[in-house]
Length: 627
Ligand code: PRX
Image 1 (tube, rainbow, N blue to C red):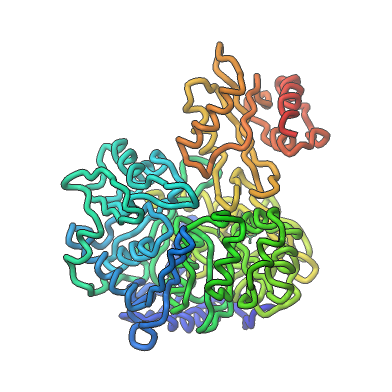
Image 2: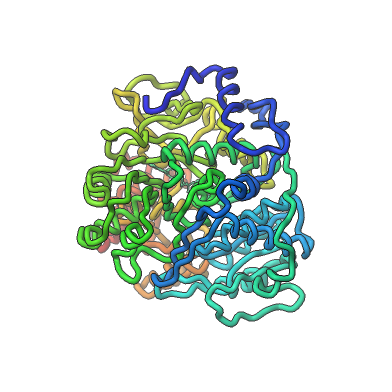
């Protein structure tokens, strides 16, 4: 066992364990109860530390001031390598309080939703914590999403305020964040009444009087302290939209007490955190990894972190390793897609920079292939640093399965061991529990404090999505294998969710973007193995009567998806085809489409139920150009 987990399968032992761990936080009123949970339909509820009262921003800021106020919270590494700044916990506290006061002065308060659309600058973290400070619920939308995607999230959560930046910088590119916000708000019947813009690049952006305010003009007008709002443990802390196998993205809701305990606990334990560590998580704050392992976990633990504005490929492919050397990073936490992209550039970009400060490497977001694991271990970590391949999800709030940071003989590609108090199981497609070394669907049989509490505005969808497939358990949507040692290997999604460069995407979302185009009759989207991205997006599209197929139209459709959802969802392949393979009852046979996209035409399986068998021939022919 990687962790010293006493027998935590009994509810009483689990509750005692978590109540003890809850003491890691500074509560306004300490909780006396741990869990009140039932995954059953008639009695469904998930509550942790219910009678506790706290404020998340106090965990991340105030409680460090007395003893380590001058400790560096962030080493901000700008997009431009010459732009670098150290920010102490004391300064972060002041900035957060000021931003909280600005929001308050404009009428934002407890329970209001605030959408953040930000680049990777310290103000992104301040904005999250400023919301937490006044009890507003933040919903960060990744800066790579389009105005449409932004608008639908603002509308879904009913946000009354937006915090954004004039522009973001990513390598040589400027991202027009404020302009995108303006476009998004034009599309809404009831747009938010307040837009706070942080000046990052200083670009001139149009301001709408009465709605738009600038951080530089507001910051000095308000007090540098702000009393934290007392929040019940189960009050929502944030909403984060994520893709599922059907419908629009879901607003996953996390609450305050359990999430904070879990983010702090997992950050300390998984990374075996030491006070002098320099922790660098390369995720964007627009994803759950940025929430839990840039903002809430590390800041609650008073860690020093690198916050990186740029991209790993700019000004050259050595940037990541340059940053490691420059700031003496001791723990690097990144995604397999970044590792594979770096690997392709050749070892020299890595080896020319000093990596002697590194002691631990982490991986997150998608399965890591053994080849990338070994390169990460041998070249980046010089064979000295253990790798923690951490498995978790937006819905889990924090890491659930990970190897130990102390073990030197990790298995390449294995997420390995559940954390204490985490009880995974594998079940077959009928929900029958599977024992021993076996492949199956990964479920969790009990709750943990960081578990999501709901889908914003749709309790039924929350239950149906996660708790109805295998009754009595939380279904992850992932498949996994357990080996002879009892270690877990995540094999990937078993539903129609893609993982492209570690970004989670629903095939249904891309399909609905495609059919929104005037020329498209029908679309089916599947993933296929991609050397760098892990999975690529392959779209099969049939056109409306009278529309002629052409390369130009395929290119236009790629651009169309990009505009509708954002650059993250840009299809790798658009295959215009005369038909899609369907059963006689009209159901698209995705299994066949997957095999064609994967370049495995000899493994199509049973095609006898196809209504028009000839369709497959033409699809195979059309796919040849992608081979
Ligand atoms: O399929 C799993 C994959 O990413 C999914 C969750 O995506 P998201 O909610 O965006 O959160 C990503 C960051 C936690 C999971 O259902 N995944 C995540 N980590 C791993 C992984 N697959 C294999 N190994 C991992 N370490």
